[in-house]
Image (cartoon, rainbow, N blue to C red):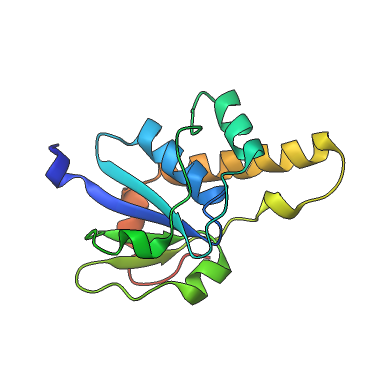
Length: 150
């Protein structure tokens, strides 16, 4: 598959600090043969250090990724925009043309409190859930393209 044949997929969440960064990293690692991944946020903040840490544990280095505002990517003709949280779904800009919208929410471990072990385990759980979702791409997108996935 050539670069121009790859699906351009934007993973979108509120801060572009955790879930969307993980999704971009997993897609780059697992699906680079068929997906050109991007991530952004509607209110971007610094990439979460715990997200970087749990991804490195899984063999995916996202430390070079950085937060981007969704408006900075409006010039890219995405095949899919996948919102990973309800807030991003509500605020997501309208994409013209062929772009298909998919909603696949994941819980946000960034705001969890408790022991370091508890919080890190929550990050690992979300990391693994996102990995499993990305493993099903792009096939799962075609069957869900006309409705949001719950």
